[in-house]
Length: 262
Image 1 (cartoon, helix red, strand yellow):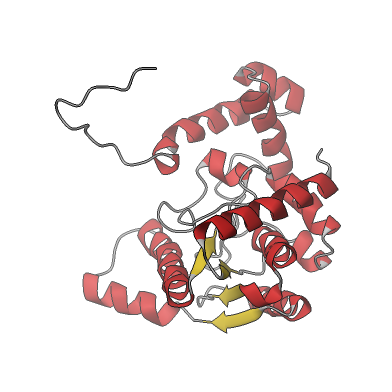
Image 2 (cartoon, rainbow, N blue to C red):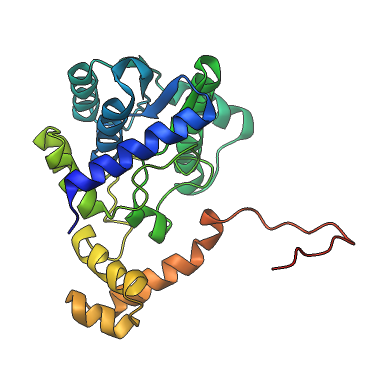
């Protein structure tokens, strides 16, 4: 468990410091209507004031109307600025120009990357920083699009597991429809997070705590979390397979440059 009041102070202080150090006028956030972006949006408003937060609603044809209703309701409650850009026509133009790809993943990832491009267009236009909304569960599992929703200037909740983010949502007074909403990237019709993951977030977060915080083996982590060993093994596998998403691209060092003495 976390102390939600302490975390609120830590995160809002972090946001203020990063924005001040950058000389930016504020932040832009992609608000999906889900719990992660809802928590980040609420914290940005608390940290900076509503006038310095631009909320971008970026629906596709797969986005449920209820999600947009939740997003609009939160923006209205915060008194923040709002812009809405439907991404499907832009994505369709790209696919038309390049050609259809096989499978779901190329079309899913291009939606996330198009959202990132729009957020940076808005950020560059208004001297803002792009705020990422990924949580620790997604980061460790690699459950995000490289250079898509993984592309941001600061990540205020990347240290919190999904279950901890939900606790923050309740503390911050987000609507129940948002705080309890099942995780869903909505990159295709009916898309949910758990269909792609080894288990639900409550079990996964417990397993990841033992693996990454307690340095437990897969067997011990599974026993302590009360799940099958295969779940812990798949978590470790996903973490290793997605390492490239959390690192800079591989690159060579210039020849003849001496390493700095330690």
